[in-house]
Amino acid sequence: MLKGKKIVLGITGSIAAYKACLIIRGLINQGAEVQTVITPAGKEFITPITLSALTHKPVISEFFSQRDGTWNSHVDIGLWADAMLIAPCTASTLGKMANGIADNMLITTYLSMKAPVFIAPAMDLDMYAHPSTQQNLKRLQSYGNIIIEPQSGFLASGLEGKGRMEEPDAIVKVLDEFFEEDKDSLLGKKIMITAGPTYEKIDPVRFIGNYSSGKMGFALAEECARRGADVTLISGPVSLECSKRIKRINIESCSEMYNAAVNEFKHCDAAILCAAVADFRPKAVAENKIKREKDDLTIQLCPTNDIAAELGRQKNENQLLVGFALETNDEEFNAKNKLERKNLDFIVLNSTRNEGTTFRSDDNQIEIITNDEIKKFEKKNKKYVAADIINELCNLFSKKS
Image (tube, rainbow, N blue to C red; front, side):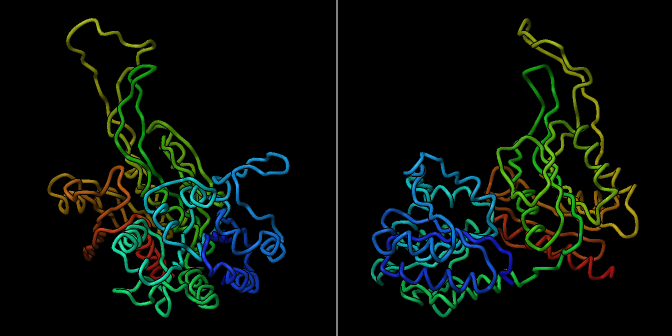
C-alpha cells in the first residue's frame, strides 16, 4: 500500500545507518518515492552518494547547498511527504526531537512535518534503558509519533527490544500496514472542514476573537486526506500549514467563513465544523482606531451567522454533518441540545474543565454524542483524537451505503 507514497527517510549517526540502504530498497520496491535527510554524524557511517544512487534524488544534509547556495526548505519537505521515517534514530536525536532543539536539517524537517512520523531507535541497552531516553520516547509518542521497536511493531512496555533498531523489512512492513489500515475508507468522498478562530473587527487594529490554534481541525483534515478523501479546509487566522494535497481557503471573519462553507458544502459528502466561530460581532466597525478618551467604552454586539444551523438546514439525506461543542458547564446537556437544534449527525464534545486540552494544546479529550449513544475517550494527542472522530464518520458512511 506504499505505491505512490512520498517518504522522507531521516538517517542519524548510528552504526545501523548502513541498514538505511535496505530500508530504501524495501520502500522503493513497494512503489514509494524516497527523499533522504541525513545528519552530519550520519554521513560518517554512510555516504550521500550511496543514498542518492538508491533514491535517484540528491541527499539533503545542510540548510544550504554547498554547490550553489540553494536553500533546502524543511517546510516544503514537510508539506511534500506522506510520512517521515527516522531510522536509525540515536539517543541524541531523540532528545533533540523531544525538546525541539532544531540544530540540524533533520530536526527542522521533523518539526515542520505535517505527515505521520515513525521512529526506529538505535542505541546500546544502557543508553536505551536510561530514564532520560525512556522519558523522551514517551514524550515523542505523546506528540503522536509512532515508535517502532524490534518484534513489537509499536512502542512496547518495559525494555523489550533493548534499543536495537528493528530490521529493515519489519520497518517497511509497519509503514505498509499503517497506510493499508483504513487507506481507502474515504476514497472518493469530498469532506469540508472548518478550523481555527474567527476575528470580528472592532476597529482597524482591534477585534473580538478567541484562543483557538486550529490544531484539531488541521489534524482532522490530514486524517481525512490520509484516508483518501478530497479535503477542503476553511481556516481562520492561524500559523499552521497543511499538506499540499488539501485545498485550503483562508478567511478572517464569521461572515467570510459562512459564505465559504455554504458555497463548498453543496458539493460535499460531509462537513466537520471544528472552527471556534465568534457568536457575536460589533454592530458597527469604527473606521479609525478608537482612542482612549474616557474610562468606559460600550460596544454594541449583534449575532453572527450560524454556520452549523444553516448547513443543517441545507443538508440532504446523502450528506453528513459533524459539529463540535466546547462547553464550560452542563456539557452533555448543552451538546445534545446543539446536536438536535443544528440537525447534526453527531457532535464532538470537549470541555475547558479537562486540564491540558482544547485551546492551544496538543491534546484533547472528547465525547462523541449521537442521538443513540455517548462514546467517551481518554485524553490523547489530537492526531489520535482525529482518528477516533473520522472512524465514527466512516461508520456512518458505511451505514448509509
